[in-house]
Image (tube, rainbow, N blue to C red; front, side, top):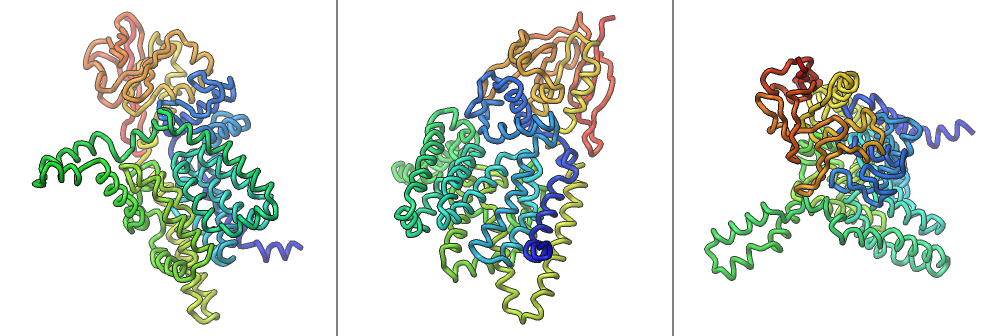
Length: 559
């Protein structure tokens, strides 16, 4: 029995083991620290766990206000579960994404096996396990990665549900969870569901005739899940996040007006050529094509240091040829499986293309795992041109080459990337909070720079601060400004903009205009390097992992 299982599933379990090891290995050290989004997930989850309310006092919200970026709820609620078992820790915050990344490997195998064959499925799963795009996003607390798991598993169960109808309602639930996890899914999943309806029209009609109750149940579940989502998208809260990244912004309006002013066309024609509609279509089309550029996929990757290793492709360059061959294979062999994969690939970049930062590694995560499945299809198609006696040798050679690429990537990711880009993960806040906590009773006031973004949340999480005490703190100062919610103070902690740090004296002015006087008080100052008032005494320096100073610590005591 054991021998049969090993023979049948041995390779898959070996791939799964690789995926597990790569996603859990040194997870508390790489990425080098929890960034402000991860911290926000972690503290809101902690607040829910302890009080049933988020940091703003809202009971079990359907969307979390957080900093004013309005985070979708599923990741935070799952994090509260992991924190129940693991406490406030890096592993607890990142665990939902880690498990989702492993789950994507599993369901990629199952989906590719169902749509194509076992050989393609094994290679596809291996690529998802080791390729930079999927691996990097499986190691941080990314809502997008959790949403991807719901999408891939939901689509697989939809395909299975056509044959075994009991899985259809579960498919709807999983796809529904995806749209309450990450915003890209709110665009992609409804589009893909419409496509599925057309691709599998005959099969769905057959299910309706034979077991209509499952179709009815699935429809009811879809209404329960998707109608509130669309309703939320229609109000300002649901649109807040897109408002920051939309193609049409003030910069776009300026470009449109410049085009009209510089045009030699008549005013009427100039308006017809230069307007929001033409600008949007042109920019959207350019954005969509950019997701398929070799520079983005195979050479340079993304421009955001928190979503990929800089100047490193998202897919190993060895797969460029196989990806192209795979596309040709799918196009030349039309069937429902290939049509689904090609439609998925076509629709997936749309959410990211609606933003001005395209191509975007995180927002385009809905493309996964299709490039891996297509590359695997291309590789298998290529080796089948060779004589059977050479195929095993070619497969071994391919795996060795992939392992070499993975080795080089991992050395860079766990080495130079962790050291050189620790600043992009707000490294140093944990050390700063630890220092303040150890010396808190010695000072009347603690002043902290806002240079690296949202210091209050790091203090709340790393302390950790009791959520009820924080919400009811008499000294709590928070306000809404420029589509963001700012915190200037709580307890005896005060947060000041880096550019408003006085060059001398002991009076600080917060963004809320409140003055903090340290002339007659003992004060501790956590500031950026070299940015401190004259006459204060330096106590310590906190450095990034590349040995560059991150924070400097000063004090002013009553003499």
